[in-house]
Picture 1: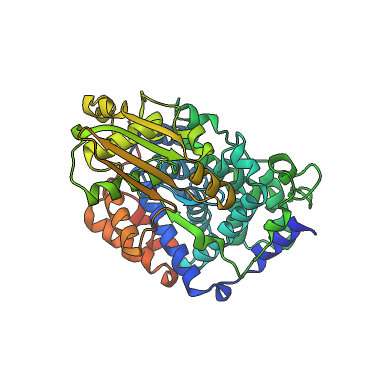
Picture 2: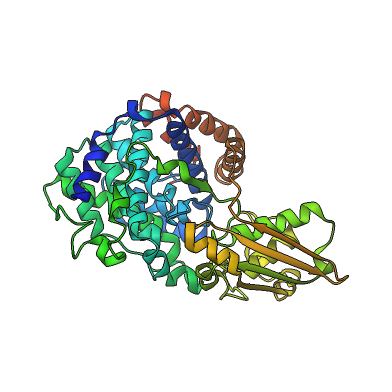
Length: 459
């Protein structure tokens, strides 16, 4: 079967009228969530470094940088906004593939949509197309991709960005096929960046994927071509990153089984494999009364893949390593009462109470959680707390809690007000909740830029 061509045809031929109401609402919620995360992320040191880089590059004033308002090229705007979105472990996530789409697809839609005067419905449709394409690419190479050294977002999300850009640019089937094919050549991102906990490189993977996807689409528009069999070919993407046994996943259920509905949002500002541990701990705390100083030991059981990612960093030295350190993150939650944007700080890295408690926490393999992971890829964990009194409490999370629509709005409100004032944040929320009624992005873009903001160098 010509899988690459079939995906391209789906991307070009899908119309807004084809979208079920739940899919439309989910796309709007993903957009709202992504822009809220980007606004808060724009204030962080590594995000400011990416902004200064983009600012130094100049470029045609085509698209806006969130918060700062700088106009730059679509590729540069998507790169920096994507970095903002992936910069603090607050993304959305497609659990079966590990792809964080919001930090790639929405920067792409904003960058190209602002140029094209796209409507809200155009943005919704392009978002759905992107998620359906990139998640199926991810499904076609798992579990090999996740078990290897590749980062799912950096590897698979360029396909989402390319198809979103192509949709907004009105590509025909052939041009979209070439955009998707070229995107395969832009796949990158290695797991050493998050797993080692060293450096800021992981923070830019979302921006890289967005920029790479847009570049792929723009090159295709200019006539550059790629192999029509880039996904399924003997030396194509699926052979390089998977084992080709799951090629049918590339097109299974297209237009009827909507992968975008399987996207969830992170509750805490930490790696996705730590989230169920924190949730289990939260359940224990809500049912029993004890303090951090009452704890003798905590054991958190997870799957082998998670163990390889989040158990290695015992005493983090920077915020990146803290967000990928399970024992530190659980201790942070217990001592500070949360593990969100406001809790992961330089001050808490050296908090003696957090450090002392983190040394009492052990991360280990849980056979039941591992078995579930091997079968269906849920993100689960089992946490056992033993108190100095001898009391033992255990909770098991088999599937991450889904955030309600109200939860998402509350999360966005807290994140957006890191950069914007409360009144502007509320206008942004109301506008995106009615994105399908927006005639063009000219009324949305100003709401994503801090009023009276300055386009000077971020320090």
